[in-house]
Amino acid sequence: MSGKARCRMHGGAKGSGAPKGSQNGRYRHGMRTQEAQAERRQVRAIIAEWREVSKLLTV
Image 1 (tube, helix red, strand yellow):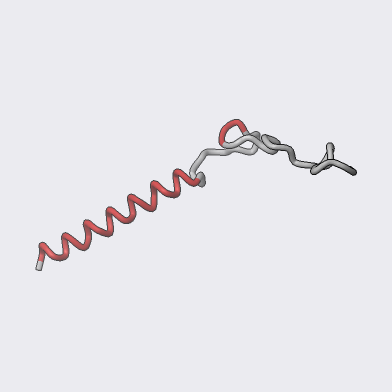
Image 2 (cartoon, rainbow, N blue to C red):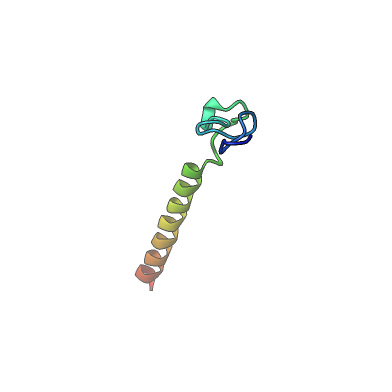
């Protein structure tokens, strides 16, 4: 469109697009959300740290 920064039909205005999380129709269970993955990484790091500590205590 001349004189405009975006096409009125295909421009992707702010706020357009699919909603996040359970508001989206394709949402399933949340196991693959960024928050869930970050939480699992933290838990794995804590477990690995405890394993290292237990190795030091058993020697």
